[in-house]
Image 1 (cartoon, one colour):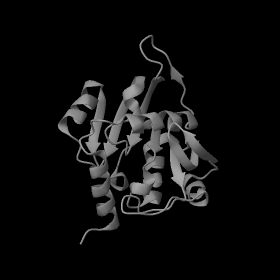
Image 2: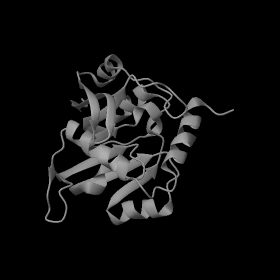
Image 3: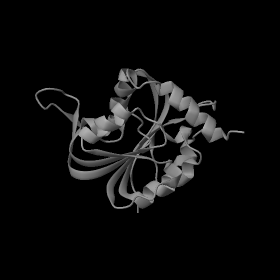
Length: 195
């Protein structure tokens, strides 16, 4: 019999399907990024770039379209438990982004400048453990998560502001989003020192 997380992971795998049309998710990510304190710049070709100024970034649970793909001056790594298509992994490699198929609760990463967590904790087996691992992995955590959404097969956890503040050791911001970048619902976000 499958665990709740195994069912959620299977659901998420099906949701991404072939990973061909990810525009909707990428549109939402720019809202997430702004709330996480990231600022875009125009490089003459696209206004959708982030200059990380030489920082190293671990992106936890980004799936096939990590925000790292829109970054310059970055050393990046994506960890995610999904079985991504080979072309997605090759795309990461071509962009200089390391990819590891790892469950966030099992990550052993250390030494990163920043850890990014966005729209992922509802999908995990143990959200608190993911935050604990992120604190060990980097100096700073940037986060965006949905609050008080109904639990279902793909989202086995209901996140609350109180829980996230406790796990992160600080106070995040909460905002009710009403259609911005196709985002609806109560959002939690912020930048937290990991120490």
